Image (cartoon, rainbow, N blue to C red; front, side, top):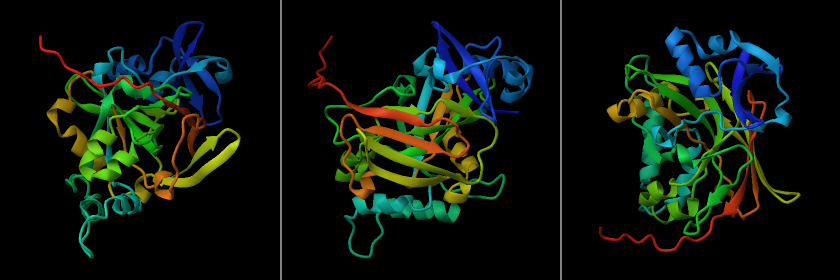
Length: 325
């Protein structure tokens, strides 16, 4: 049974490999991209896993090929990267500490948002639950390939990891979104900027993001246990377990998906969406200041390969001046 799909490049040519539960990787014939394979599945009325299983070919040594993002689009403008925050049990604690500007005994906006999700984020089937916090990160051009550096802009306060699970979606021809699967990811944000004022959250999220190489098919387990680690040379400067999956969340995935795709502009046929579901674990909350050269390593149960990327300082592009035409 196919567990996940991985996009690869070898000899200058792209391909898709299917990974089974034992970790055996086999090339999927007739598919050069995950998006192309998903389009085949929609046309045939079959699942992504069934479509891949019907075209399995030679085994592939993953150590001998270049691993790519598990999803991309030939026109990056048609891939939207977004996310929801304050969705995990415990996720409000670190945010609340950053935003403790309210009067003594009065909950911050962040805590109120979290409590709304805790109370109404898992509605009964067919019902609409509490609306989560939502943010935009960018289009497909911000996604960083496995092993490639995540760049901290010169104007940024910091560049910190956010170990998360992301849902990967394709909008069908009738404007109907279908979930292709899940990817392990590093949502990567600027927590120093966010701490100044929670209204700067939108600014803090306009950064790159990284995905692990695997697109996990099917449903996400109720509980996903993982570990996020920061290495500085040969030294581990921080490492903590993180939990995801609905058993560890204040919202159901269906509720988060509804509140994203209820907007008509997000149901444009042919578009791809990468949506990060949030986390409760940040090195920033533990007082860690990341440095260029640090390596983020995010791994989790059910994913054979980690999301691993170094941190790099981007060059200063100076003032973004606009001229009159």
